[in-house]
Image 1: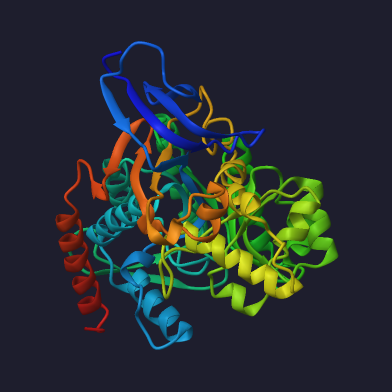
Image 2: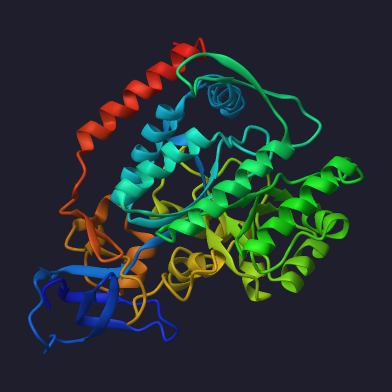
Length: 454
């Protein structure tokens, strides 16, 4: 087996349908997929590369179902969230070039690898009113992601109709003002989706669409751009992503626009009405719950209740700004506290359910559950080795409880995606971490100078 990788002596949390946990087992990886997994020692032919994972837990790679491209270079800016939103919007719309988006993507991917996030879904830009669809910017992002080895779903699409969107464009090496219409953005988005489909690699490009409030839903412009985006997504069989549903918006958007089906991914979903919940159950739309996000301060996503009703609920980070990180372990813990406080019951969202939300349910939310999200023969080899021989993860009791309640991203020793080792012993493999940081710092200062914020 000249191209095989064998992981030995690991405790294995499979997250398969039976939720099997193997006390000491092996995982054989061939051609990017799990070829065999089992208890004890592997009895077959010796693999070309072996990892002795004694003292470690092997688990599926984490799946972050809601984040934003750009945020990694705007974290920590401003005094509060309102201040940050103003600054980030100014940078995204007025001060970026292709290098900003490429450098930010490389930094974002490095953080994800080091936190154990093997798959992430990102909106390209800061939100539904400052989405970017510049081809050069998107291509710079995708090139950096491809070089990193991570798996990604990137959502691109139109801004909100009725607002004038004028960007300061540095994409050709000089400053110009460019006025963008939602219709033109959607044309470019469709081309980007098609180009990604032709590549057929670890990176998907899908569609995004703003969440519209009741006052906007009678607009012909809103109706037309929404239905066209929906139809393009359905024709291509890709996700349609929306960011910011709350308090009746799901039911209203469904009634007026008919947007939702099993390939709809709706982020935040706070303070939902009974009608909202009924639409989710009827249409099969999926939810990305973001317990660390600012939106979760303004209202609660009824994640436990939705899951009891059969709705797929996954976890997202909402990216790394203004005050967060890509650490999905942090989000598991925060989700437990968030809903436990609401119900005054620490039994809400037990460890196994939290781990599922961050792995197999995340894969299901992205319609990728047949490929990733659990450790099973035939699936893509996206997995982590967690160093459990540490004071905060000791004594060696139930590994699921230790992972969901005590672990953090810095406990990830090894990250493997598509059978390729991207981090080993906390060191990136095949990438220069120092060079990534230096590139990001240069791009950050250039953007701050252009925005007049230096």
